[in-house]
Length: 84
Image (cartoon, rainbow, N blue to C red; front, side, top):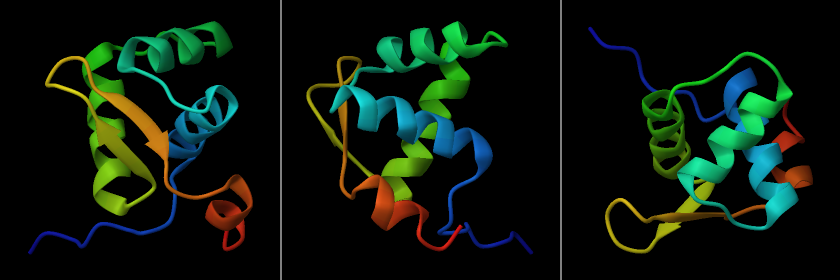
């Protein structure tokens, strides 16, 4: 049986959220670039998967057309991290 997705943020998801909170909103490439600047390179497909999970969990809103999506936070950093 598959496990249920957690509502809390993983370490990588928190890194992505910190990037987006810092920028206000971002596209996939901007998030990937910021993560790569922080250390170990991350593939675009990995970032896309994480962004989709964050949308599904309700931490991000996705707007724009396919392939040109913009991601914006739906909560503040304080709201998202109060239970970590």
